[in-house]
Image 1 (cartoon, rainbow, N blue to C red):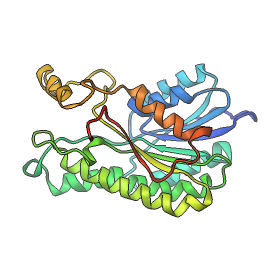
Image 2 (cartoon, helix red, strand yellow; image 1 turned 90 degrees about the vertical axis):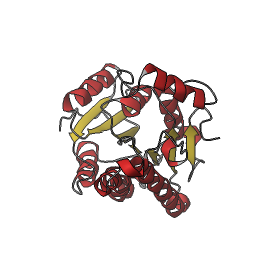
Image 3 (tube, rainbow, N blue to C red; image 1 turned 180 degrees about the horizontal axis):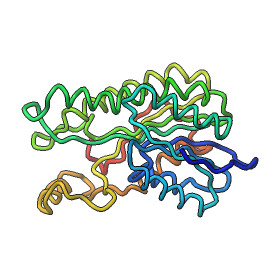
Length: 256
């Protein structure tokens, strides 16, 4: 873990899991500034995470970097403890760590299903258990999880059985946590991206395969990371405080 001292003018401390790339990294860049401090997490990509932290420092933000597998029961408490030790508080949490595993029933083993559940559903559960006692003390508390279109869209030739099941569980979990914390003034939501451009581009399918996917999206294009991160930034901001218990889909109409 590396730390930069936090100045007194910091207005919020934000924990982002899966912050080494993709939506997590983009969100951090969008909301970074001298008034924001970060706890940045990645499972193992330490160099990439520190590169993100360096970019945030250029924007005047302060951050600490923490690595760990969210499937490990010790990781979520360690993240909460890191925020407490470095800043004495934690205001907002974004659970953006996760992955997509393509495969139907014949291609999916019980171990694949369990691994997805542990990484995403149980990982988010553990993160909420560890961090919400701190977040509920904040004047601007927020908890946002990143889900996926896979939990609501089931094309015959493009199934994500293991990760879709995990994300569906995550969405139910988020609604339950939201119901419990609404009276405490803590908004809890999920954002579900559709097919979204990734760092370095897509390589798992051919150009023809991606064109076929775009043809299945009403808006006929992939989403952009900044579009998904922008919605999360809104939920974290002062105008997002009356939205709770929602799964907000940023998918170009894919799940219409």
